[in-house]
Length: 219
Image 1 (cartoon, one colour):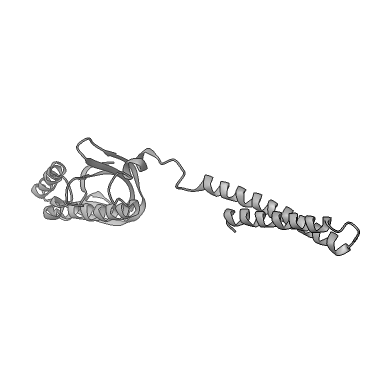
Image 2 (image 1 turned 180 degrees about the vertical axis):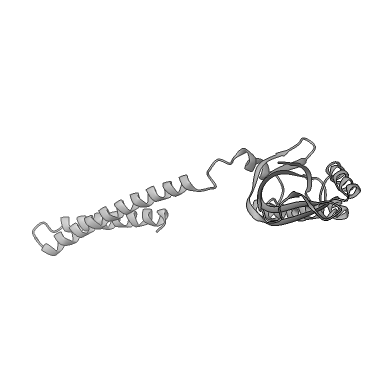
């Protein structure tokens, strides 16, 4: 029952109660048990409704206090709320997919895929490592088992409308490096590593492209 319904019902009961008292008062010579019972019943109903109204009021206040809409947003969420059409869950899912593609492409030396997902500056660093491995005959193998955690840790928007979102990934991976003789020189194919990566994605909010580019990585 809504608060407005309770208020209306209270008004009706008050009017009925007043009317009954008026009617009973016009017959002082008639002592009727039925009139007394009716008057007492109305009083009880009035008291019950009053108590129910108080309970409803308290429940509404408690709900209002616990409502997410009234809770103060974190500094990160305040920034995210300024990004048009931003959906946190969708972004995190997309970031996880990007993480998987970038890690796999870097391991395979797939420079074409990397160019479409990372910034030019970061891609240059990736290219240097990939070229060095090729020159030394080193091959990399990465198997991403899954994610233990993926959460947005910070966000900011610059004065020129560049949005940056940092995500912490905790993943399980198997990483090995082999030399030109196909011998394992780093890692263990039977050992699953628990790795924490902190990646920052960037997008210009005035751009027509909805894509976010990876601009930095940290361990």
